[in-house]
Image 1 (tube, rainbow, N blue to C red):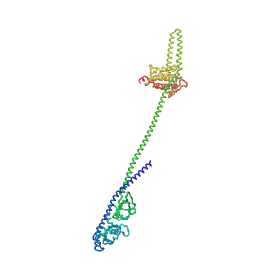
Image 2 (image 1 turned 60 degrees about the horizontal axis):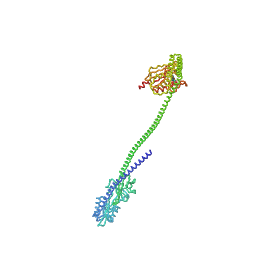
Image 3 (image 1 turned 180 degrees about the horizontal axis):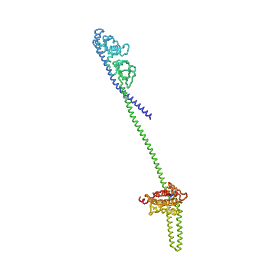
Image 4 (image 1 turned 90 degrees about the horizontal axis):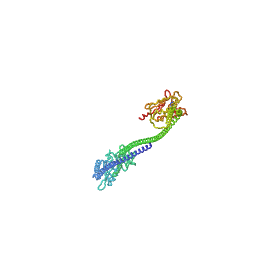
Length: 593
Ligand code: ADP
């Protein structure tokens, strides 16, 4: 990532450099083109000016050659020669030339301004003169050597114009005008652009900058000694690098143009500094623009990256959330499935329990029956024995013809048979498996039926029964047979507990209590040994092997009572003995509800 960013930065910087260079190059190119156009016109102007000025002296020379005082070609030293010299002196003064002279064909000076003979021998004058002798206009320029220094700024540089003097059509001599180059230059001082004219040898002959007069065109193309760093080219333009010259530009566009008419080449050095500075500025601006563009781009990229990172984080978070939701959903469906299974198992277990309870109820009843069987046998056997003896007695009384007494005996038999029938009815009812729904049941009748079944056991064990039956029926919600079973269990437990104890007393009460009807069975036994566990199935403190010690009585009673919406509880009495209470819903209340 960092490497990629580094590469991108490098690329960006390279692009910036390339752009700046391209802009700089283009700017320079265009600038130089413009400068070149200006330099061209400046150069043309300077060249025209020089040729114009030279033309004037040429014309003056031609005119002088036609002057009558000169046409006679007077002999040197003669008064005519003096007159001719005066004419030449006047013209030279008027035009600013440094000297004029008249020579004959042999090169003899006939007349002239002061020191005319001295410069007639100068090489330039000779060249121009030779040309004039052929009848044409002679022109030359030359540097006069001064004291052995060939290239000296102070050395006189002169233009020479030679016009033939005609007698009819024959050349008889020539007028030669000498013009100091400095004379021309003096009029050019203070010009902005450095202009100079070089001869065929590359020597600067005339210039508007004194320092350029020291220069000689070197093999590099530029003037020595100004050239410090050389020249460089661009788009066909030549730029000189000049050092240590206060009046010359450091970077100068150089233009050259041949002037065959005057045998010189016009050259110009025009300051390229502004162009270079402009190009540099453009370059800097391009770079700055590129950098700011880069900065904006960078900021945008940064923002995009930040956004992408945020998006990615969000996506990741979403995915995580989705996965979590998925997992949670899976867990939930598993839990739901487990719950459903559990519910099903519980429902099945409940059904099994109900079945088991029903079976238990039945088993409990059978156990109770077993418990009672000895008593019952006795109970049934006694009336049977009595019936036997009453029947025997009745027969004896009938034989003795005492039907009234026999009647009495038969009536006793009937009573006893009825009593037995009642006991058997109760037994059958008790042993019947019953699952009838709760309905109003007279609790008094239930207690009476149980006491009847248990009466022989009560009587046998010498238990005092304390039962005061209410006058009116007490109706509760329940099932007659199952309530009988509950009461029978409680009574049997009480009798069991009191077995072998002094002053056994069984107290049974019926009372209304806070909207319920309460049955209380109290004994004078030892009390409950383990109140916390006595309602558990198969909890018994009674001897193992005894028919009564199954530990089911209370648990069956508990499920019967609660199935009727009631409650059962047992507690020890402060004075000894146990008390069991059964609260049941009053039938009147159930109907009202
Ligand atoms: P079982 O009579 O077969 O033992 P029960 O469920 O009827 O089973 O009684 C459980 C136990 O509760 C008895 O073994 C006894 O310890 C205790 N119990 C019940 N009734 C009394 C009572 N009236 N007095 C003392 N203990 C009692």
